[in-house]
Image 1 (cartoon, helix red, strand yellow):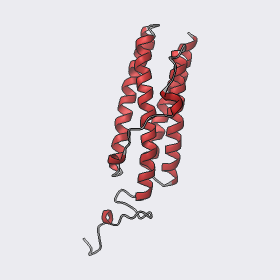
Image 2 (tube, rainbow, N blue to C red):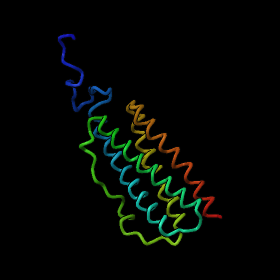
Image 3 (spheres, one colour):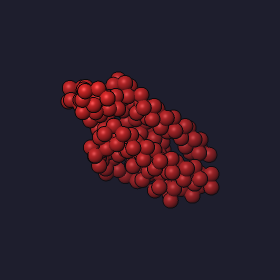
Image 4 (cartoon, rainbow, N blue to C red):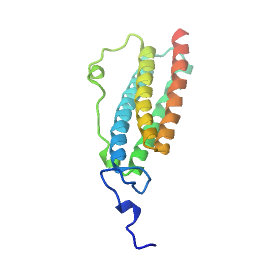
Length: 164
């Protein structure tokens, strides 16, 4: 090992690279975005669970909601792990979603409500993935891109059930 300081000790607020190859400033920014994504996902999990109890239309629909619930739980864990890999897991915040969501009325259209929530999650993930891409964090960008695919596939599935 050379006489210089190890790379992980060369962290500065002005953008020197951390041991994982991205800047300290970026890590703090992306963790804010990931906190927002997680808050959105928790709301979707809550709504999925609630709608699974409300809608007893078909065994196929129930099974799909159960798969979605398991997939969402897994995805939250992966995003939390990524924040820790960036060295900022301790900065994840227990955020609430926008004020409009806090005092929502029960939906007359539970499938439509789930579609709306999936679209909001996709929007939050796209914003975070754009930031990750701008800073060259391919791992976070790829993780979010994979998660976006799940939501984009869930939306038409829910729409088709809503018509049936």
